[in-house]
Each structure stands twice: as C-alpha cells, then as structure tokens.
Length: 153
Image (cartoon, rainbow, N blue to C red; front, side, top):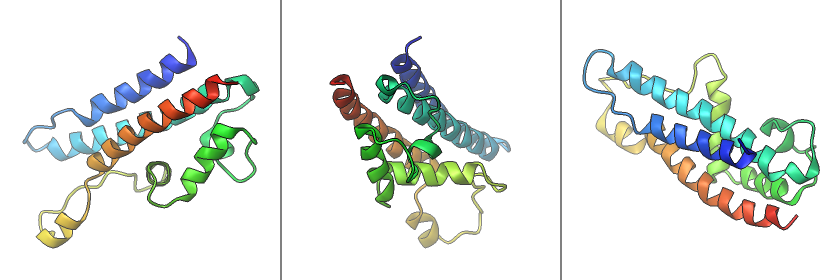
C-alpha cells in the first residue's frame, strides 16, 4: 500500500465510524462514544500518515504530528502550512489536535450527554461527532491542496 492509499484508507474508516447508527437502547451512548473516540484515533493515524506522505521527498526518520507540527519541526513547505493552520484557533487542524490531546487524557474525548442539561446549553454545543465530521471534510480538502504542492517536489 502506498502512503497516499494508507492516508485515504484511514480517513475513509474514520468517516465510516462517524456515520454508524448507534440505535436507541441502553448501550447507545456507549456505542456513540466508542465511535467518536475510534474515529478520532483513526484521524490521528491519518494525520501521521498524511505527514509521511507529504514529506516523503524529505526522507524523514519520524512522522509524528507532535514533532513535525511543533515549533522545532522540519522546514518543509507543506508542514509549515499545516503548522500555521494549527496556530489558527478556528481551523480544523487546531480543533482536531486539541481533540486528539483530550483523547489521550484520562477523561477521553467523548462525553456522555446528561439528561438534565438545559436546551440552551445543549443547543449551543456542537456534538463531537459533528465537529469531527467537519474536521474530516476540511482535512480532505486541505490534503488535496497539500498533495498538489507536494507533487511539485
């Protein structure tokens, strides 16, 4: 499998998890949370795979997003664009990496929704699955653009 194929596969699998129906039984919330966290974990793998793909020409030893998108990362044009995007708080990459950080925390990223939340609070907050779907769409769009510039190398 090529690096590009692996990236595509991981993004597709994350999308599948986000679109699974959770049902309406006593395990529905747990299935929803598992789907959200599973999709988020696949998106982290896809981010690493995308970085491997985009930096293939640089022959880097490591492709961890924390290292490459950190301040001391490699000076590769596509990586620099992603680094700048991550600094923008409303970007898909900033949201995604923030959610990945919470996934690795003790509490995890998915939340059990309380039955006694007020409608105003619940309506104001975007569900994690919806947020991840948005990140996934934007990730694919950005990846397409980054692939074009990476091909030039």
